[in-house]
Image (tube, rainbow, N blue to C red; front, side, top):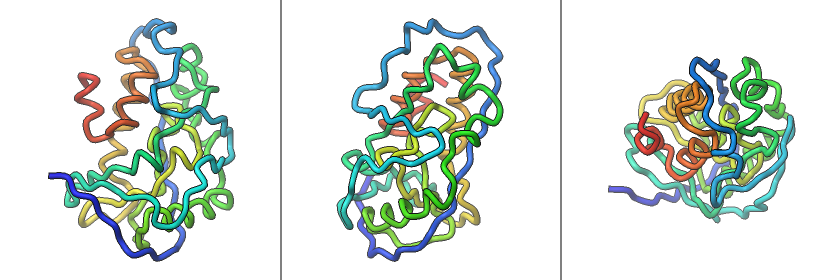
Length: 205
């Protein structure tokens, strides 16, 4: 049963997790099937920078724990609704998220993200943990934006030793499915933004 958790804040800096693009192996879906951004998800242009489009205050946000031992934790949808970069479209997948090195080319540098990490810890009321990732809800490898509407401090599973967490495998699977033409970009973005823990099941993957 899901529970909501608030934790006393302790502000420190966190590492930013990485993503890997996967090459296409199957025919692409029709571009017209995925030209409109998902409902409820923002559009924010963030090539190599970070945009604070939420202006959150301390203690405003609350994580939702699905299974703490497994590290299945969801962000507060009122604070982290998700955002996509309009520069990534169904039509240009081969030159964006399905191209090796794409995420590195658009990821903001640490000196830009560090202040936002501090603010996110305060907003979510979370203590520092070396295994907590400052995470893109919709990952860069699915066209996610580097905006505060799409970034949150994601606690890891029990016993973790790095920032790698179960959501990373979901992100890679969705990127592979989009690049292989099995699902549309918008469908993948919507599934992971609404609940990353059920995204693969929703998409039939």
